[in-house]
Amino acid sequence: MTFLVQDLETIRPIIYHTSGRAHGVITRLVSPLDVGELIKPFVFLDLLDTSGREFSGFGLHPHSGIATLTYIAEGSVSYEDTNGAYGLLAAGSVEWMRAGQGVWHGGGAGESGLTRGFQLWVALPPQLELGPSVSIYQDAEDVRVAGPARVLLGAYEGASSAIRAPSEINYLALRLAPGERWQYQPPAGHDVLWIAVGKGVVRVPDPVRRGELAIFAPGQEAVDFVAEAEAEFMLGSAVPHPYELVTGYYSVHTDAGALAKGEQRIREIREKLVRAGRLSAVKSAFSPLTASIMAPKVHLSERTPSTTTLDARRA
Image (cartoon, rainbow, N blue to C red):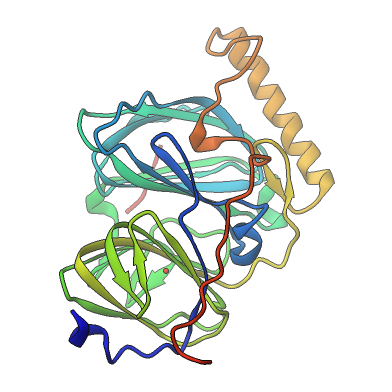
């Protein structure tokens, strides 16, 4: 493998590298209180990997001020939300839920067997954080493809996602064959760049392994990736989010006033769910996948660079 990676240049080095914090089948790689501050508008990232373990799912829970994108790489999960959508996300499928002023959603185990995927939370700008909630679902064949990249948000090499991103964001799902080399040139202004590996090992040239997230130094330079064996990873790049991250238990907003309005809307929807018998009057559903933003911080370890010096169907 050495001859495949020896000519990789470390122009844009890794500045942080983490394996996150595991909660059963969920590993939290990003939250707003730690890594999210470095890579906003990306404020949460969870890896779901059942690896043959039992997965009971996650009940109805609320969000406001953010959008979530759930991507299933292998297996399947069920989903439902208070916009009236429900169904099954199979491998390669996408759930996009822009919570806006407030929405509840949940899901559970799909078909039996291994399930692996990622759920990303994206902070919304002021003009969208209290807007109407929107749910969009894409089957695998609806996701645009460019080479080894599936374009979940944004655009890459002439392929554009049918989902309208809330800001200047690219979010790609990559699959590389053993020894395959791929280069990513971020669009202008995309100073934020990170990858999270779901399978295998990717070299940049330092290795990033399954279950790990790596953040690159700010800049505009291209980054080269080489796979060791078959590798799958997510890549995110973006223009930095210029707003503060004001957090609640299930929400992220740009200021305290917007947070208060979002949490009020969440309570109103909860009351309707209780009256309909879909939610306990004592407490709402809670799960590791959407655990409180106030959970313990992810431990970060700084990585020293090896050289000196990332058609929709409206439900």
